[in-house]
Image 1 (cartoon, helix red, strand yellow):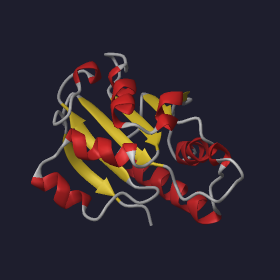
Image 2 (cartoon, helix red, strand yellow):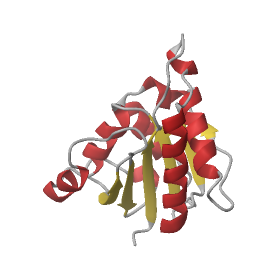
Image 3 (tube, helix red, strand yellow):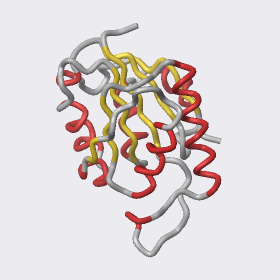
Image 4 (cartoon, one colour):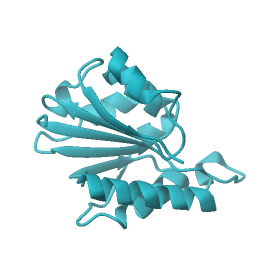
Length: 164
């Protein structure tokens, strides 16, 4: 295993609301988020730090994931993740403290998918990714050094779990 692990999660399926930021999880999305939490617990991916978008659906996704994890931290809401722009999301990841070993980020497409593709653009990674990054999908990366030094092509995609 690398020095650090980055776990990228696309929020679970959301229902409609008058404002995009207020969209809650759908009943299916609640089940998806529960499944992600169970998988992260079984895989041993308990984060030291969690960054999430302040959108309602990402907060609800994390709370359901967190319920399955022992000693999972309170999330850090980061407005930049709601901006949904690759460079801005990568900047938020780079600000992670040096002592953090596992970082979970819960965000939105297209920036989460863009980050997955940017961090490991190898043929093997593209094969693991397959046909996209549906709601409640998870990408796990090995990061060889500090998050502050993370750059495009600077991580290895080790696992992808697609939301169902």
